[in-house]
Length: 79
Image 1 (cartoon, rainbow, N blue to C red):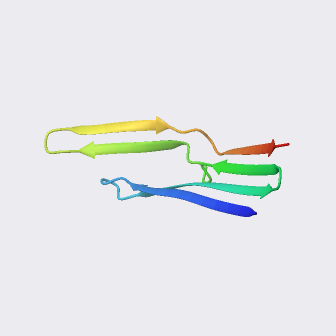
Image 2: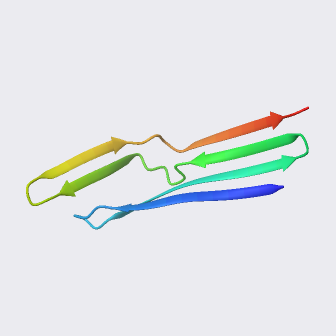
Image 3: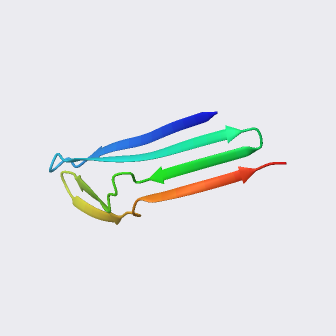
């Protein structure tokens, strides 16, 4: 059996009105005693996330460094 999953998030900056789209994907294949799974994280390879919060009293800006795109392959066998 083959399964695919896509997880995504869209964030936006209220000041510049720019959106940032994040996505992860996973694929799983199983057959009797075998399980093979591939995960792809940070598909669009964003390297930072800017977070700006503005209220009537304060303005707060944060910059987060993100992990680069990565691929993980898992293989399991049961007997």
